Length: 624
Figure 1 (spheres, rainbow, N blue to C red):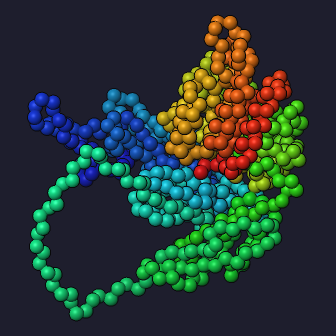
Figure 2 (figure 1 turned 90 degrees about the horizontal axis):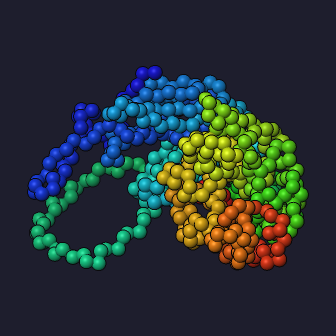
Figure 3 (figure 1 turned 90 degrees about the vertical axis):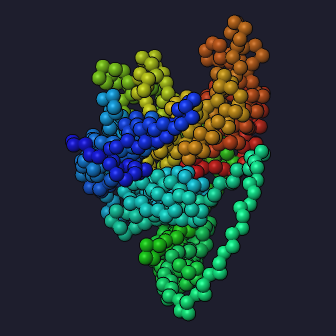
């Protein structure tokens, strides 16, 4: 494949390969020297980093290079792919469904290559698609801040399916993978996902707000006002002014912006337009809806399924969206507040002793039990945090190229066992009514080693890009399912970000430092990456370790599972659980242990945590 020159944003005119000189202060000389800026890239960024497309959909990849100083530079980039076809200018398409990797590479001055890859999931076209749904439906951003949007399709029966869309946006830029970057203009704008056939679309609302101005420095000096210069009077305007352009439609507004309905009930929506001159005007829009039906006059009738849906009004490339929440009574309502539960607190579908303090269950499942598990969770009014591919690491390890390491094919094979109509329907329903909180695709991708049973292979086997591709794979089967990963926020590539994975399951132990600092650092990383976070506490190994040389854990909650670890005390369970649980979308504990759980003091601590978290508003484990 022939390399191609890409002109990156930020390049100036003239010879594209000539150095860009910049002044450099020469110490002690009293003068400035001129040094050419290095034009060789040391890093390459491919956009989009991950994306879902349909068969034969044309997708444009782009690349940006940066030198050691952080400047964008021009570089010859060669494109390659593991499947489908990619042209020298970065245009990709594939006729067969599957997951592929596209790589862009550029040569550095020392003869090595810098490479960046992107994950593409190719899905089949859906002939009977009824609507497009964009998530999140709204976002508030400061200038320069990014937000990733996702689009899924909905069939006539309510099932969700992965689709390919074309993204457009105002007020900022958006790439082919749905990554939006806010511009500098304050206001309200739209992101639009258009089905490739061009007949269906959905919108999201973006509010860009200016960050607060920094306070002036305390030692600032107010400069004297410049001298007043007399200004000659302007000449009188001419007798006739040019005719202003005729006003045109600039915005459509759909009211109400949000509504909550019971199944089968109706609500009349209304629209109006606003012209370029600021005047309101009547508009004849086309309505479409998910989760129910809408007439040409805007009368929406809620369907029978619980969940979050949309009504869309569009005309001449303009659109607005109302969010619809349909609530279905389940008899006794599921617990309110922030869910709280322990790993391994069930045997198949039977809860272990003393789980009445818990409002959620956490742990590995399999395709043969998941339908019974969902039914049991509804009966017991429990939330589910799933690990569909959880369990022993050995399940997904193979000798590849002579190295014992994680085998993606084995992992994908396990995920495919869930890819049945019955399971997908049950999971979608459990997501809609709040029974399923989310699914994490991997536990501790940071662990590495030579085969000690708790490893994914040599260091570097797992990366955030690779884990992101796993989250994307789950989304091809369950588009509405929140997906995440379990690891400490500071233990796995903290300088890199997830683009597809939506939440981080972040576990605290005493040896990681002050719990408040740990919480705040985890929240800061989640905000940076636009993710949700749910915290966990390690009951059995997370207390203050035994330090007197005799592993008896005197004065603690008991001996841990291996020296010198000790269990948490009831006070630590109470204090740390409330502090961390209040900050996330759920609180988990590792793990259910009969002796620990049945201790009366620990039971009181669990009840205190549950009671406190039940008073707090529920939070989604999706991207905010």
